[in-house]
Image (cartoon, rainbow, N blue to C red):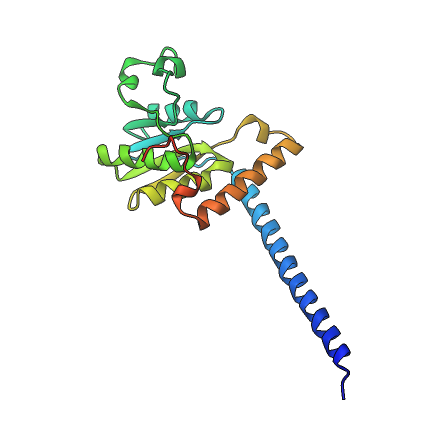
Length: 205
């Protein structure tokens, strides 16, 4: 007959091994997902088809300039710059902008987060009867931006146009890795959580 103490020890070891296996699996899954996320974030931009609108999300270098270039190329009829500070004018963002282009640009001033960008974009899309849209933001931000905008504007066709900030064009540093990890975790949270989780109180409703 097996000693109760031996049976108890076997059960304890089994539970520890089971918990360790689960933790190891989660770690491997997280690392694999992060490697994929970084690879996806570093992909070069693909020229989008002609759409009715373009939206640029503020918060990083080169986004507004890239969206303006697309507007000039006729990739969209109108442009929304989402997340602009209340005191900033179009002339401050784009000095010397041509009058004909200026009339095609809208400034969204209420979004203070990516979820807020989604809500702000949804209101603009509905107001202007837009059915397809080019999204301009950083590569590391694109997945979360696409998710939030598609969640706020179901049925609108979205096409990404990634902008690579200067810090991702050079050798990775500790700061770069921290940025990518934070963005990865924010994207995961956005995927599994409701929109209000990452929406700031000041965001557009």
